[in-house]
Length: 108
Image 1 (cartoon, rainbow, N blue to C red):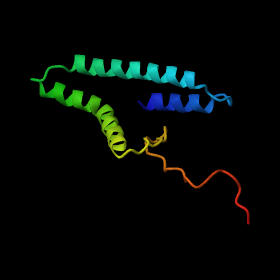
Image 2: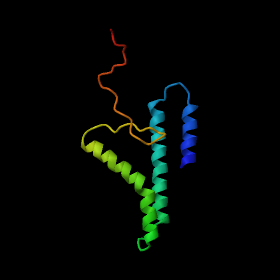
Image 3: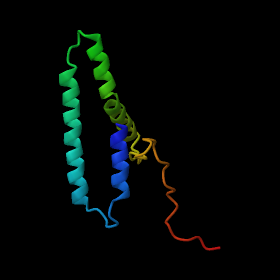
Image 4: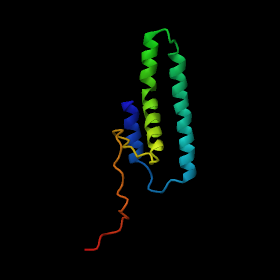
């Protein structure tokens, strides 16, 4: 996972300065969802023996990040708040931007 995180950081550093189209974002999101479903299917298929405590434990460990993320999103949606952005380096939530900040300089 840390190798993938490093690779992801390198890819972010090398990204072009041109804006990304929404179509490209949607395609990447769909691809990511496909990969996520494959990971879940592998975890469920490989560790499917509910009678084996080791299988149950490993399956729970593998699926915990997905379940945690789903629970966090459900919590935000139930409060009718937008899902916050996350720092890709740390996984920590980024602070909400100041809704009164329009990006314009303040007159003194």
